Length: 385
Ligand SMILES: NC(=O)c1ccc[n+]([C@@H]2O[C@H](COP(=O)([O-])OP(=O)(O)OC[C@H]3O[C@@H](n4cnc5c(N)ncnc54)[C@H](O)[C@@H]3O)[C@@H](O)[C@H]2O)c1
Ligand SMILES: O=P(O)(O)OC[C@@H](O)[C@@H](O)[C@H](O)[C@H](O)CO
Image 1 (cartoon, rainbow, N blue to C red):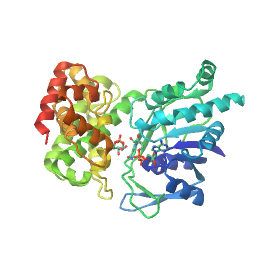
Image 2: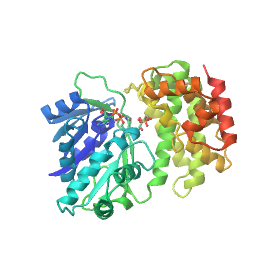
Image 3: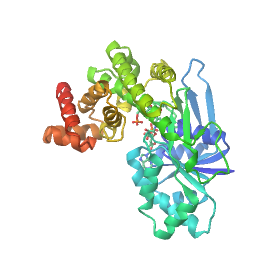
Image 4: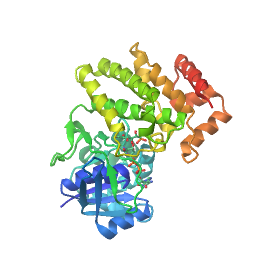
């Protein structure tokens, strides 16, 4: 049986990556620090996914076990040394913390003389996530190890799309997911070509597709979340009933289409993007899903990053001489986002209270374009509470 090691037994890990790997006949070792989830995986060896559709279908996932990396790091290293594929869905900010374990797993393969190729795929909402993870792993490797990695270990980038909201069930393993799902892997970066996963789309040109996903699904989602938070709505569905928020979403989508068509006109047409964007609106409006604004708005400092879902499209729209007012408006609302349960939201509000606004904008967005910084300052002041 082929073996997969997956970091992050959370929503998308159990709700999508686990499903695909299991359907492809893999035994899956989930790595997580959540003791309850790890214990339940080991006690039962299987779990159930519910599809949030009127039919409420159930999908069984079996052949699973768990390792707590906080308690048993050496077991994780062993599992990586025996794996046929390694995946992650743990959050972009956490990738640096698992890099050392992955490096040790690679070193163990090398010491054992293994010539089996291995791909390590970060399934995070992030452009170049696997490349970033590979760079972090490199920090723990000698020159000899790096030569081994060049030959046998791949870090193919990927885009993963399925809305998996926060879960509130008695069963800690049960997870409810939307019916839509899409997992695209950059085929050109694969080291192991001995298998392809059914249910995964392999592309030689991931960039247009990951940008379409991140700047449509995630910029759009965040638009609804931060506008909803600003007006006091608690869920995405609730916010979307507000016609001003729906208009804000459509305005962001229109700017995204203009950017995608400028950059990737040979891949997409206006018509295909309109259809893609309408499907996204209907996915956000799925009445079977309760997706909290706090989940979609989580980690606002990350979402204000230079290459993230607002600042990157804004920079690129500006460079293409196109309007970015709708994106800019949401940036103002991200700076106003205040969730006492979210460490980054608290940190952002503390920074705003204690430092010069211009300096905070420069620090969190990484921008050096003074005109753009001034525009952001204006919109932040407009929405400051
Ligand atoms: N939920 C979605 O709709 C969705 C869809 C596509 C992509 N993603 C991406 O997938 C990633 C995970 O998102 P999620 O919604 O599943 O989050 P989640 O919080 O449900 O899952 C993350 C898991 O990682 C675990 N974890 C955190 N730090 C850890 C550490 N140091 N060591 C081991 N385990 C650790 C947590 O315990 C948790 O189980 C994010 O990058 C997200 O952007 C999520
Ligand atoms: O996971 P984040 O925090 O990057 O973004 C929140 C949501 O937009 C995201 O999880 C979506 O539900 C998901 O990307 C859909 O594929």
